Image (cartoon, rainbow, N blue to C red):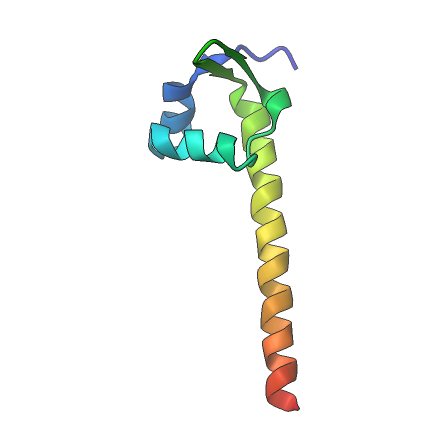
Amino acid sequence: MNEPYVPIEDVAKHFSVSISTVRAWVRQKHIPKDTYVKIGNTYRFRVGEVAIALTKVSSKRSEETVDEDSLAELDEDL
């Protein structure tokens, strides 16, 4: 993809979250290193790639929730 890199403010606005949330996603590795560049204390992101990465994180969480619900149902049956 030849998508331009944009500042963290644009990522926050795109996802309707705070800049602090985007920083937390970076720290928690929900946003992989290959979707942004860091120069000094400045980050630049490729929004499309970030969206794909966050979709994968969201899908994984959904699968985990389903698994936990299934386990709870099994416990009730026993």
